[in-house]
Amino acid sequence: MTLNELRYVVALARERHFGRAADACFVSQPTLSVAVKKLEDELGVSLFERATGEVAITEIGAAVVARAQRVLEEAEGLQAVARSGRDPLLGPLRIGAIYTVGPYLLPRLVPALNHSAPSMPLIIEENFTAVLADRLKRAQLDLIVISLPFDEPGIQTLPLYDEGCVVLLPGSLPGAARESIEAEDLAYERVLLLGPGHCFRGQVLEVCPQCINGADHADGLGRNLEGGSLETIRCMVASNVGITVLPMSAAREDRLGGQVVCARPFAGHPPTRCVALAWRKSFPRTEAVEAVATAVRAVNLGDGIAMKPSSGARQSSGISL
Image (cartoon, rainbow, N blue to C red; front, side, top):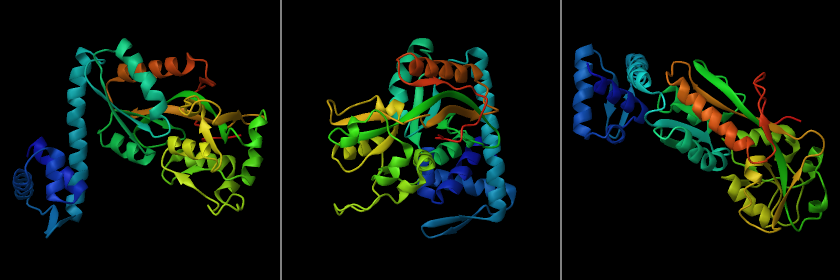
């Protein structure tokens, strides 16, 4: 049995299709099929049930694939240990970020790391928290930037900074003249939300659970509208469709210009979220993790926006008043 054979069965278990698994492994379908059959013959069991156009994994196959995944992670760990012994800041670092952090943090983080760790290029992925967590546990990513709370077995987290949130309003709305917004007032407005799967959606609903229903409107658009990204929602706010809540890092990036939209703070204690790094406890390049953490804190705290270092003494419950 070889590591390649283990990679092939793990890919086939994930894709449930020989063609897609072969593409994921960058080999031909016959090569992958022969290798999987060879491993089955060596083990003396059938790992997969084959049918036209689809593949199902057997019960024993699921157990073998789980063990194969751990073997591959250990093999990757051996290579990483060898690399880190030479220089932990040498070689690519695979980093993931949630959609509501990546577009605003990464353009500042990459130049900073190019300066502090020029031999450590970033391979970047944006995705939902659940997807990033799965890819991190599969060793397909080295570390991820997420919002706390985040509690996964075998995963270590490091709080980076607490980020305040603001209300984004159309510049023409009468409320734009107010100095601050009461959280309770959101229940009487159409609050534009991210779609399901975005952790920031749930965090906004913690501030104002009523805004999932919202107020009745006479414009025929209905109570609830959603966007796939914060930038899409910003454009709908500019079109006078409704209002929204943005993290400070997104609010500072006014790509519309002028007075089309305006950001107003919450009255009293502003809602906040805690942004953190997460990585496998077995990941050997701890100096690389620290380099990223140092760069993140520097770029977010050195430009005058309303962020502060996380105390690290708590697991944030997301946005909280």
